[in-house]
Amino acid sequence: MKLKLWLGGALPLLIGLFLGLLFSQTGLPNPVFYLRMSLSTAVLLTGLLITLLLTGALWWRWRQQMRVTQQEKSLRTAAAKDRRRFLQRLDHELKNPLMAMRAGLANVSNGHDETTRQALVSIEAQTVRLSQLTADLRKIAELETRPLELIPVEMGPLLAEVFELAQDYPGSEGRKLTLTVPQAPWPLPPVPGDRDLLFLAIYNLLENALKYTAVPDAIELRAREDGRFVTVEVADTGPGIAAADQPYIWEELYRGEVARGAPGSGLGLALVKAIVTRHGGQVALSSRPGQGTLVVLRLPAG
Image (cartoon, helix red, strand yellow):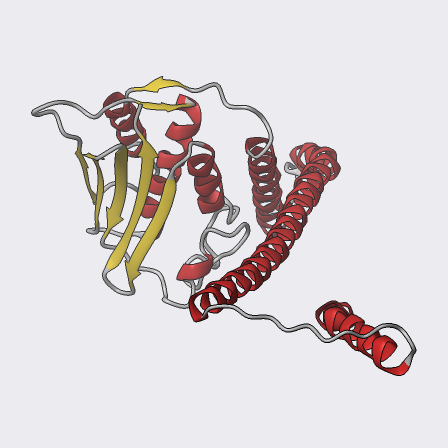
């Protein structure tokens, strides 16, 4: 590549050198030309030449940048396609063995001593976790490919429904759960989206807050209109997330220091991000270890 660029830049000089030698070393007529021009004309022609050279250089650079951008886009598209294919294949390969394992465990759970029964309960819990993992992987793969049927979703009633379900979460007693949705001077505007997916994304955030907090921590679900967006926030006074973990929490299967050993597939936040991204929205998180966590969703309003 560098050799081609060097040759391209030196080509006019080589041609001029060749023609100069041709005229000076052969018997070809070699008359002398004299050129007269005003200073203003010389300045004008010099400016024109410099402009042409700069324009050519900028155009060449723009073409190079476009080529690099297209290559990067092609690589990202290919990587995303390979990833979706892997997730779909993984789901297909794990689903049947897991069903067989759960059926087998159900058949042998009776008639054993207490130690064996406890071991079987533990194995069954892990198979349930793997089943949930494959189900969540399938959801993420489908989210990235299947078209969404967008309808106006009233966010006030949806948030109230999510909040009511969260109050039935096992072990939620003793925590201070609050819901803040504006009613005056007007309610939240609707959001074009898939209601079930939006419900799942917000409930996953609330479930995460419940999972990693303890009595008497506070959890707040709140929403507001923010220009052309509806902003939904889930805040808690739990243990927070370490600064080293925060850049990676939206990645699939990543589990931070606090989350290790806790139940779950490690795909909840990745699923939230996939849902919000498909709706043209944005996700953000801020957290202080020992003080709590704030997760913010911004969804375009209809």
